[in-house]
Each structure stands twice: as structure tokens, then as C-alpha cells.
Image (cartoon, rainbow, N blue to C red; front, side, top):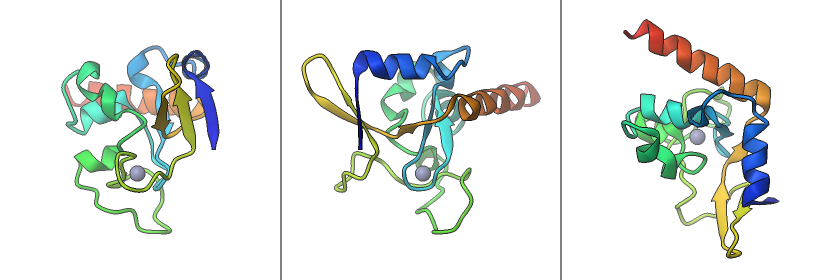
Length: 129
Ligand SMILES: [Zn+2]
């Protein structure tokens, strides 16, 4: 388990090198799907980043697309029904805020993964117009 303070967490997100905070990317602990706020908006979790912020790095994008439980051996990308709000505290990253409270989060995606996803989401957005 990795523990980060809030400033460390924010620095790590910035290091992903994406243009918008909507593209900060996380990896689901269960299915390995790389996802961002924009992924969640596209999946219908909300209309704006403010709507989906509470799900980013916390609830898998598959929860909003009825992806169902992750099947072992399935390639990442589809999402699953996992959320860190459940009974099991299976997660890889704990973000500690200034009051010492712990916030479980999915593992951060690498800069390459985050940028690839941002590009993918941007392309898909243009295509849907
Ligand atoms: Zn998942």
C-alpha cells in the first residue's frame, strides 16, 4: 500500500502531463482499466467534472456502463462494478489530507497511460459531434 499526502498526490497527478484535470487518470484495482473524470462523464456518471469528481479514482467507470463484475483474465478497458466504498478495503493508494484523514484511491496511471487515455477521449469526443 502506498500512502501520499494531498500535495504529493496533486504533484503526482500533475506529473501525468495531461492538459486538463478531467484527464487525470487512475487504474482500477480490480480490472486494470485506465480511467479519468472524462471517462466517467462519457460513461454518464455526470455532466461536469464537479458531478463526477467523487467517483474519480474511487468507483470504476464500469459501474456506470453496467459492465458487471470483472471476470478474471479479461483484458482491461471494459471496466467493472468495483467501488472502494464497499466492504472490502482493497486498494493500493491512501491519500492523507491535512487533517490526517485517509482517503482510499485507485492507483495512479502512468503519464503514458494518462496521455494515451486523454487522446483517446478527445478523439472520441470529436467523432460524436
Ligand atoms: Zn474496474
